[in-house]
Length: 446
Image 1 (cartoon, rainbow, N blue to C red):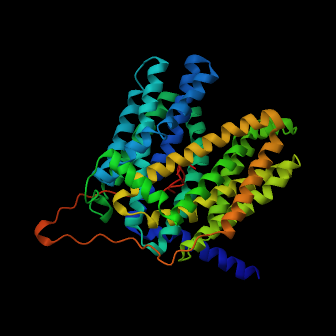
Image 2 (cartoon, rainbow, N blue to C red; image 1 turned 135 degrees about the horizontal axis):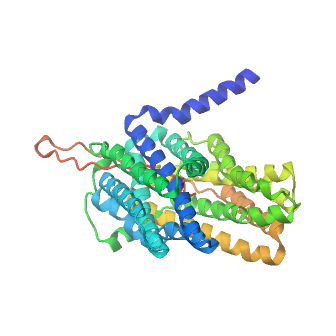
Image 3 (cartoon, helix red, strand yellow; image 1 turned 60 degrees about the vertical axis):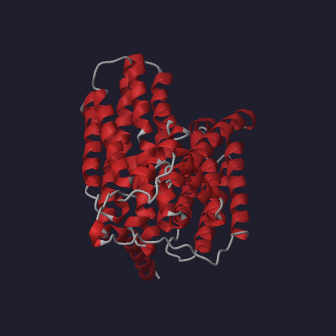
């Protein structure tokens, strides 16, 4: 029995790592890891720099707010650039812009100007993520696409934990400005790696350039007129909103249940760790879109259904750790869901559609955090967290029972080779994040 379990674990690990045997994916994945680590380190360093200058928690919190503000609204417009001008071009330009903006923060300037630079750097992230997400289906064979998404999702969660820890270590050794410089360099390294993908199949822009409004209409139509894609997006948004309620209330829950303040960091880290476990366990190797959607629904039911009663009972001690760990698994629904989305979207509007999807995910998570905070102030943290997860459980059961079926599985069309008389390869690149939102489509944004 033990030998069989070890064999299953080995096979699962081998399948998760199998996309790394593809040179193009390996290059894209390594560039993303470098930029993700640099981004988390840089954001922490900028927060420290702003707090040292102002001694204000509000100003320090504003760093995160302005960094993420571009994902909603403007981000969807900028994401269309990846369809119009090519994935590689957009990713390289985004990385170079972020490198320049973080390098500019080394110059002495008012705090307000630093936040403006952080906002502008944040605006370069949505087109980068949309291009990365849209490129992966062109770089990875369909039978490995789910594993590539899972590996990317695991990488995002690991980068979150490692990047924050690495930032703390670097700030203990260097000052905040030196760490910002390292972040700037990380974006340049990422740009150089991505540039090497300019000759891949993912390097071409859309066959026909349309206006920004046209790109957004095409992306929205691709998301909402396909019932399988629509269901996958709804699962990701509902699960993400419920999980974010729990994340937003970690501190008040811990304090109201007599957990030591020294354990807050550990409790917060358990959520992404739970996501790592969930991502590694959820099945993505099935051929049917319906099966993938059922796996996503089962993941939602399992994680939310187990954690909800623990929070309702005000679990403390080891049970509290278990509750937060299990809750993290709810974010793993993005892997099978994003597999459906990524493979069914048409190539020419894929980046625009994914930009809209990320905006919806970020919006649902922001709404979940806001409503969760209001509810907790009225009925209490335990009841709010249990209620949010309970609703997610009910939704997951409904999604499992009513999974749509589609006899026509849309297989993406591979680009045709150019005729020898006009070989013009405007290379670009694609990959799906959180992933994430963040990600996966959502992997990097969760």
